[in-house]
Image (tube, rainbow over all chains, first blue to last red; front, side):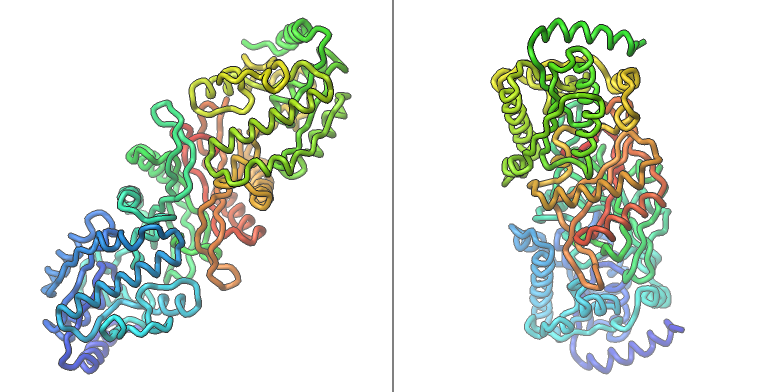
Length: 310
Length: 310
């Protein structure tokens, strides 16, 4: 039986021992993993920690503001890095899923390394959890925050890695969040991948496509808030399809809605969402986003599918 | 109120008058529209009609054999044209939906024109119905069997057009089919587009992709036979997505299932199919077709979507 209180106590000692007199940076995306990591390290080393929020342009509606506000309200020194243009530049011309993940990872660690040097910091804390390690090592996906396991020495980016949650599965991370007294918006927060909305634009990632999938994601989240599912999101296809808008034939965009139940993201079940909810999502997405003519619902479990499309 | 009996009597007279001593060819795909047309013309002019089945390689499992057998059992002279290789050749390198439709139409009429010349025939009978005309003229889609309406003179292909059903909507065509004593497999047959499975492969059409979507279509039809819906089918995406097969991460195919209710194809509703049926379809498609990792269900009505994807 996992004991969150004991875990926090032991972690604090471990972190203090490892970090010593060094300074630490924590890349916080606002997800439960990275926020718990940030708060845990802050509890252990106080002002020797600087939290960094990298605005990669790929976040959900209102997310950058929410994360920065939350960190500041917890008394954590916070650095905001606007890297939107740089991230979109690396995606240019890339259509392959794995290439996109690698481009994101590389730009992410370079940006973080730059912030680390500016702040004269030796350690980077990050919210890697057990499922990330298992899936990366098992070749299921290349999790962006699992460097050593795939043979990348993080020191090439100019720092050492601190991963206090790497032995935990998601439900235990949430217990730690509650133990730390974090608000519900964090402790019960839906998982959201590191490369964010870039995984939810099939084909080349552009600011316009991200804006589209951001709007669709907002609609899906609003309409499924009460379902209490593990993860709910929208994906923009690269394929197009015919539709009818204002009585005219158009060749428009396709959006897929994915809603799954899961304990730990290692396996997942497509939720059997009531049709009235699905039809309302479909009507809103095709109604509120002019270029979308078709809305699909993902009916595949993991396996044989993954939760995300890329 | 539409009277099928009267319609048949009047049509026969009209057809006899128009055709005179000429000979007629009827391109029969096995769908209710083209089969009713063929049988009606046969009833009117007897052995002056030759039915042609063009095997374009794009038909559903077992369809070519079924159509030829049905026509012969009705005592109709039938010509089978194997044009599979020619059709796949024209699709090569074409990814745009409208270009694909045009390529199909052009190859279709050239093949038919060749058969007409071989049989020294003056008229081509075809199963154009009212919805085809409305949608083509309205710019909703370019129906492959509506030539004059879009400014193409069919005589360039070497014949004149005979369209006995062009004033009828689908439910009336089915009434005529029953009046003519056609078997249920024909009179109640689900609509199937002229360009067949080529519309259900997004992106370039190849024999391998057609084989994949043919198998998926068979699964959808088997599992939804008892639903009594207007149209049920599968679509193969050009986009790919990640999945897990035999414990390994793969980048595989996506198939969408579309099941709609409609009276006349002018508007349609996505059917709220019980999830147990959808999940079984998803499991069979991802289980029986090795490259498919993800199965989606179309939750869009027409409008704003169309029934088909292209």
